[in-house]
Length: 146
Image 1 (tube, rainbow, N blue to C red):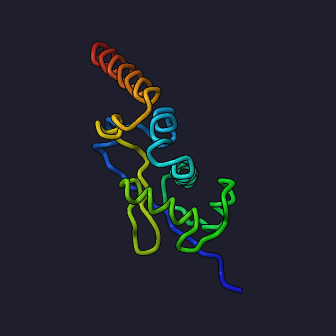
Image 2: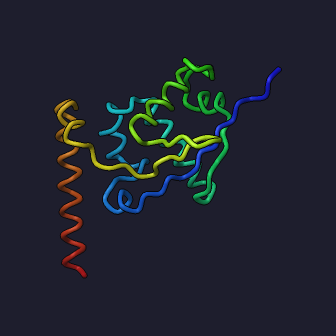
């Protein structure tokens, strides 16, 4: 019997994105990024971010099969498994960075790019505009209060 495969997830800080982006566990990411990275990718990002936060902002080591089980997906860990494909997809979108023993995970994401918005359904485009307008209003109010 082989040992369970573990993967280390470290936070991937990016002060620039964190200053204007959206936390991975935000409503913006939930509504606007699901169609970009897929539902499993979104859940992986959110779960990893929550676990990193629960560890005081430090990295966490997870069993790949247990991570899959937590998300309610197949616990297979082979090269073509759902979890492996999801991790590659997140890496392809620049949301995970492969490290020698695991991944660095973004904890905040940029607003969708113009290309991503063009490809998104109208509902997501409207939600994006609403989130961005709310952010601009809040920013203006904070500037006036200062």
